[in-house]
Amino acid sequence: MRVLEDVEPREVMGFFEQLSARHRCSQHEKQATDFIADFATERGLEHHRDELQNIIVKKPGTPGYEQAPTVILHGHLDMVCKVDDGVSHDFASQGVKLKLDGDRVRAEGTTLGADNGLGISYMLALLDSRDIPHPPLECVMTAMEEMGKVGGDGVDLKLLSGKRMIDFNWIDENQLLAGCSGDVSCQIDVEAGWEEAEAGRTALVVDLRGLRGGHCEFDIHFERGNAITLLGRLVRAATRAGDVRIASVSGGVQNNVIPAESEAVLWVPSAEADKVAKAVEALAVELKREFALADPDLRIKVTKENRDVSRVFSKRAGDALIAILALLPDGIQTQNLEVQGNWETSNNIGLMRTKKNGVQIVSTITSAVTSRKHAVLDKMMLLAEMAGDGVTAKQIGLDAPEFPWNPQSRMLEIAKESYGRVMGRAPDILVSVCSLELGMFTQRIEGLDTIGIGTNLYDLHSPKESMDHTSAARVWPLIKDVMRHLDR
Image (cartoon, rainbow, N blue to C red; front, side, top):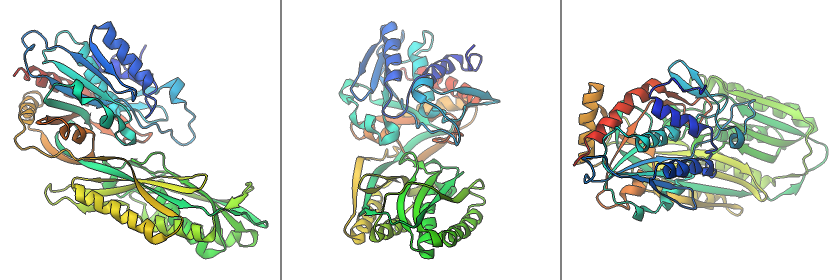
């Protein structure tokens, strides 16, 4: 028996369970697109798949809707793949192990992938249906959205004819999405200036875990701890207490995820190890107090370990790294004066790794205003320039545009009317702080009229991620009602 066999809406949950059994981590979407390509072929539906693993499936309008204007439906195939502390899991061979927890669908020890597997499942259910009235459909399922919107930038929009669009990559059933931010990412490299590790020293390991983490856009306003910036503070405390050299640092899983874990290996004179450890532990106590509300499960462990350390950062490189971590902007930068209650610009320092030549740090800047986004990017470039030799910064990936609110949107009016009929109340109209792929469509398809419809999802990009299946059961009739009223 399937885990979701008796969960409504069955036609949607059935496809979600089939998708969950397949590898969908960013850059590994082929199992999912093979499934969708076979699905389309079995039903005689036109489909197009590209080298990025974007896939477009088309379906004619139902009787009476054949000549209605085409509607584009969109969602992304990939998911953030994160495993909980102490859990061993291979997404490639095991997929996601689903479990029911009351009204919630969760995964056992990993991220769930309802972001955006649920959106894909809505589309597959529409494509599979024989009794839901709808106009001609062009279902666009993009790859690698979670790693810089690579699929959205690369998908061939010349294959599309629609001028109306519904996006299913949203997380709140109470809202209709009418606009969203754009984003850009920055990579900072700090050369290590490697030196041979001196004898007579001890490896001191600073391990930080237990932060809530979360989505760098939906959760940034909760003021949760950033494991990378906190590690920088701890390492700075260590260097103040003794002749400490950095052997390695790491933190985070992906640039668009608030980092929940980090680690530093420090090379400390054996005679100073206890003193340095006490200095770090003293700051750890302060940090636990500082984040008692936002991150009550924060754990910081400082241990002396018998590690084989052969090389360490030069003192200058270590000082530069600590300064960069202390001075990089992180969290909310500006509030949105146009949309009350929204923040406008934020930055998330999401990933840090020790590489062959030194340390690489990647952060993502999100903003509803392109110039503000570029101002933060420029600040990071200037910071690297001021740090001097051995520190560089560059833009990486795409400069994704915002999706601007259109107060004259006919799609929004249709969706509002459907929402009132199905939900019995008026929806909230949201211009969101998050960055989605929608701007890539609205900027490239002239006159595209776009909205987003969501389902209640929680704790995205973390092993605590869950989906409210009762929300999906409410939203599915809304989607069907909107389809029914797109006859002209």
